[in-house]
Image (cartoon, rainbow over all chains, first blue to last red; front, side, top):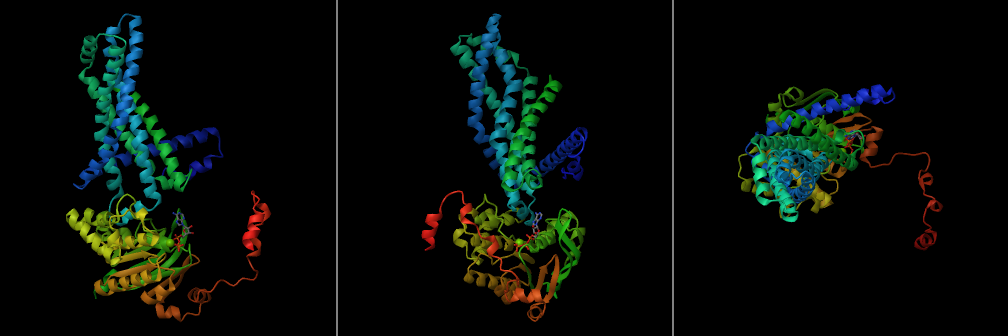
Length: 273
Length: 278
Ligand SMILES: Nc1ncnc2c1ncn2[C@@H]1O[C@H](COP(=O)(O)OP(=O)(O)OP(=O)(O)O)[C@@H](O)[C@H]1O
Ligand SMILES: [Mg+2]
């Protein structure tokens, strides 16, 4: 996975056009490398029964420990949406559609995206830092010498745990956000309770739910791939080495994850609905 | 002749990073069932050579044979099997920071054997006992001293009963008693189990106790390859200085140029400094 080519180095002295070209080439080759990295990690999820306890431990770290923050974010997002939509809709006397607005915006967009971004900050950065530190302190080499595939020992359990945790966290977000919308819209501002829940139930199609799940799944894979990849290849970075390399890798992983989450969100949305 | 099987032959080997050789023209046979000590100045490429022999990096050119196998030509599966019979103690231990010592040593057993977790742990503790660390099995690597980490690294390298054991400076950072015990341990391993041991070391006393065969690296090549007696009898200038622990001869004294001028300090400490000097 040699994303740093010598051609790119000499290109710095050339015209802006070649610079742009070399940058995009490097970006594309890095994307390709990450895709292969992801496939490799997924294949190794099923390499042995020994993966099972590691996956459970990662689910605890990525999933269970994110519950509080997801609940808080979900609650306040729901409350804000309940309030804003109520104001907007009541301008047209359409406050009966509050439930529809909250439910659709949450289930289709906000829950998967916000969950993924929060988990990137909480767990994705930690994955990069953990793997990066192991790389620069030769712990990954040590695994290799012991005949333990570092991909299957370090990356695959995280991948499996992300695939399992992201959709569950997203549904939790949905649930709490709908409750938050009820808190402000109904309890505080006085929209009709029965209508709110009736609209929630009536507006949500199966396609919305499954689309939301699919997004969560994709985001889980994206976040895990980017975070683990950046950590795993910390030693090949050219912008920094050692501890600074790990910090650069972590920053890079978070930024790249967020950008990729929103980009893939756009693609998925336009394909799904 | 069982020992013969694990000879390690390096032919025209060049090792290095990113295309730049660190050591080249290595034509050496590390004899099976013996202890080979690799000597050489700091930074001359001893660790690099060992890591390349274990294929952590690909050599720039040349071939590496372990027993009859050219390891560069083995299939992935064959190499995975062979690797289980090779152990490496890293220069700074390289224990996994998130596992306790016991779990670190038990890890290869858990991954590669059908032992129950409990049994793997007990076996790991018995290996830790070989290096005197059985009481520390529940501690994490960052709760240990450098020398303890190194000994734990050795226990981990030995846990799969390797046929070839590589040790990168096993005795550096250890007190004389622990060093001597480690030397005894290596000798016992060689005698009892007929394993091949390759030790990187700066420790001349230890070299004189354990070495059957010595390789000296320097100036990017192999300076010496032969038995310990041949080394002791050498007349080569560099090797003699190395063996007799003599500093390089210099024409000019060197301390005068590198003294720090106190007037350059940002903080004015001259008064206090003078008091301390007196
Ligand atoms: N990852 C690396 N990338 C590039 N160069 C390296 C790398 N690791 C080591 N080197 C270089 O290779 C040379 C040999 O390093 P090595 O660690 O093998 O020395 P050594 O003989 O083990 O020294 P010591 O006795 O101090 O451990 C050094 O000049 C070092 O700068
Ligand atoms: Mg070294």
